[in-house]
Each structure stands twice: as structure tokens, then as C-alpha cells.
Length: 435
Image 1 (cartoon, rainbow, N blue to C red):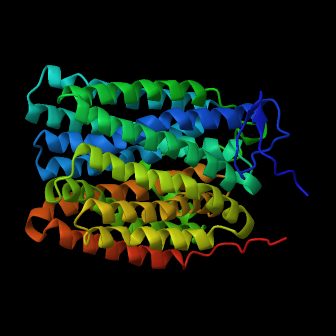
Image 2: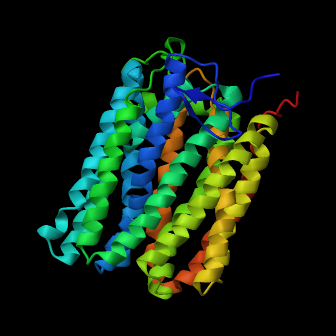
Image 3: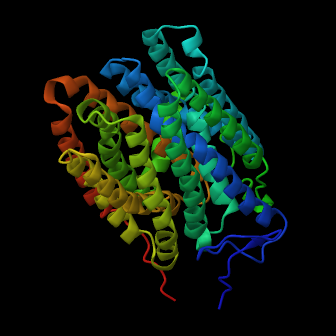
């Protein structure tokens, strides 16, 4: 029987049912520790920036079009650079950790710059400049998506990956929840726009600390090239496109998953700007209330990571993929029926449980339907799919929000999610071993 006791790194124990490999030493133990410390600090950045950037722009009086651009703009840029970024990292695969670290520095510098905009610009100009900086920060997005996914796959073992990822997501979620709760209070205590400026400074500084730990990850020698395969010689763009399409046709499971993922995430990203508009403009919630909702959602998400991750490693990813996708699909439909804070709190708790399942399953299924040899091009194509939905969904929705209303569009985006969740059931996945 395998030892399932929690790991200990220099006396530090993780009190959870998730096992990392307590017998690991050297680079393996260091990788697990650095994955957690990176998650701890980047969770603060993700929580503050992910929750309050859109609210900041709304408070500045930005039009709905800017709100849509905050999501769709970065998505378009990331989709455009995904394939070239994959080829770049393929040529420099042994240095992908360093490349990803420098890409993250660029992103965090952009958000740090936002903190200083109100000193020099009017409210409208600040909203426009913030939108532009967020879009520019996505330039290394394609590179980061491909490199980081491959790095995590390289430093974790398949038989325990779900539990490792579950703990990483839980740590990230815990710091995100605490930071959002504290951030909401900060915004209410300090006069605007200084409150948002302080928030962006704190978020960026924490992100820089996370890079220190991320840059210390060590990829095992046997994984340096296996996921990338030999670099293809340079050729004309059309020839490279034909080769890429031919490779895609060879991976039926990946194509099924990519199509379902595209439809599902059109509903996911289409609803994103609607949530902020509904909570702030329709219900008139304060920053503290918005932060509380995000905190409750994240709290229940991180609690659910542990059982979902353990279940996925034992029984496979199909069940939690379907449970998570259908559970999250209902969120915009039910939120459109909620008119006050108490039911919204209950809904965000309910949603958090299924968000955990979806996050773990989506990551693991992606790795399951992409072969270890030559995984990078498929990850790049998945990045294009992800960001195509992130671009089209918010842009279309916000452009028609004044005509059809936020409530109706919440129902529509929920229906699109349900369709995508049903399509996930058609993805051919290997049956898990129950031994």
C-alpha cells in the first residue's frame, strides 16, 4: 500500500488528504514546494486583479464596450501569438521556465503601471489606458499558457497529478479569497482612486514574489524534450499551417474536446462582463459586497479541490468534468433570478464546489487527450480555442447588452454553457483503472 501521509519539507507539513510524494528528495521535493509557494503569492494577484479591475473601470464611468474589451482584447492578442509562441518555446524548450518567468514579469509590470495612471489622467482617460495596458499585458499570454502547462506536466507525475493540482489550486484559492476580502475592505476605507491604486501596487508586488519561486522549478532531464519533440525546420506559413492541421486530425479525442471546450467557454466568457454589470449597476452592490461574493465562491472552491482531486486520481476525470461543467453552467441562469445579497451568497457557495471540479478536470483532460510526445503544438491550438471564445463571447455580449438587457443575456449564456457541457460527454476518454 502506498504511503498517503502528508509530505514534510524541512518540518513544514501540509495537513490534507492529498499526497505529494513524501519520499521525494532533491529537485522533486523542491518543485512541489515551489509550486505551492508560487500559488500562494500569485493567488493574491489573481484575486485582486481578477475581481476588481473590471469594477475599477466601471467606477471610472467606462462604457460597456470597454468592459467587453477588458476580456476580449487580451483573448484576441493571446490567440494571435499562441502558435508563434509555441514554436519559440519549442526551440528553447530547455529554458522554458526562464522564458515563462520573464513573460510573467512583463504582465505584472503592466498592472503595476495602472496604479499610477490616476495621477496623470482624467477618469475617462484612465479607464481607456487601463484597458489598453490590460490588453498589452496579454502579449506573452500564448507563450505563458503553453509553457506553464507543459512545465506543470513535466514536474508532476500522472498518478498523483490531480491531487497535486488540487492542492496548488486550493492554496491559490485560499490566498485569493483572503486577498479579495481584505481588498474589498481596503477599497471602502480609502477614498478613490487612491484605494484602487494601492490595490494594484499590493497585487503586483505579491506577483513579483511568486516569480521568485516559479523560476526555481527544475524540469527533470528526461522531460526536457519529450513533450516538445524535435523542432521543425522553418518553412512558409501556409506549409506550417497544413502540417499543423494534419497533426490535429490524428488526435480525434483532442478535437472532440477542443470543440466542446470552444462552445462551453463561449458561454463562460460571454457571461463574465455581465456579472459585474448585474451586480454593480442592476443591484447596486458595494465593493465590500462584491468582494464578499468572490470570497465565498473561492472559499468553497478551495475546500472542494481536495475531495475532487482525490476522486479524480482514483476514478478518472470524466465524472468530475461532467459534474463541474453542468454545475457551473447553471450559475448565470440562477444569478439572473437573484435580487439580493443572501441568495447570491448561497449561489456563489454552490458554484464554488463545481468550479473546483471543472478546474481540475479541464486541466487533466487536456493532458489526457494530448500525447506526451509532441504535446506543445496541441497546447498552442488549445490556447487559440480558449482565447477565441474569450474574445468573441464578451465582445458580442457587451455590444448587444443595451438592446437585449443583462438578465436575458445571462439566460442565453447559461444555455450555451449547458450545450457545451453536453458535448463534453462525447469526448472519448480512457476508462480509469479501479485497482
